[in-house]
Length: 323
Image (cartoon, rainbow, N blue to C red; front, side, top):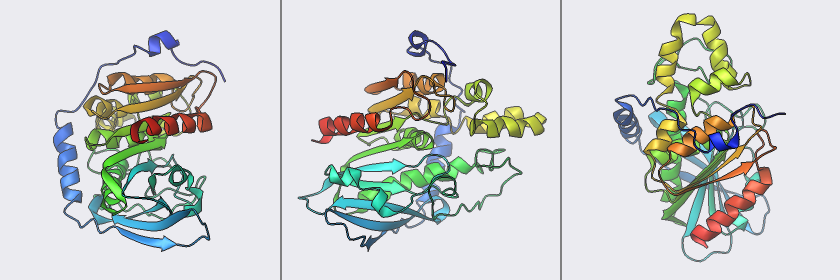
């Protein structure tokens, strides 16, 4: 590993120009309004793993186009009153796995909700939610980055980001959750979804994105050869006449644009040797956020970022927020 990007002094002030489409806000308002035409219908089914300190629920709820999305919901068994809730989104290629893998935050005294990512969950942890594309699709490079990429209406992450908002609504619907105290988190792709959720749900209490993906697409696709950004450059290597079309679509999903729209307090993290989500792309989103914010910098780390060091940082942040 080596430092592949700007010096830290430049990263701290790096704020590239935004390219927010004129109909960005109306696109997302109409997308979410359409999703809410379908009954959320959250279902929490208890699952007994023989654990004594937590309750675990297998969750389903209606996401984009009313399609059923899976997740896990975990509560401390001993609790008084309603609890603040942390909603988590998963990194690229991973799925929700088993419920007993997600007991840390409940043991800290919080409600915890993790959303399965549609179509994923076969690269490093299994998932259970298929991706159905009711709006049509295009030829794509293997992976998810170019699925439906020729139009914002059909792009894969339109469905994922909508699911993310509905996951927050599902978590809020549970009687054990204090709906006014919700935070969101995730790493890499999960960090990108976290930033999007914070831009789309203004009354969250905090957003905790780690080494976030899907930020500053133009720069990311030209300074790293690493997957998953390389899926986009590989697609454009073949579809040479689609470059502006593709980046027009991606402008509706760029973390820079969601961060610039967000008023949610945030704790970011970044690895300065990150070859997958280069640090300038993370700082680009962070520096456009106008809410109260902090960033933890891991100088000699690649895409693993702070790992469990950052988990402790998030735990301490939430203790200050929620007690």
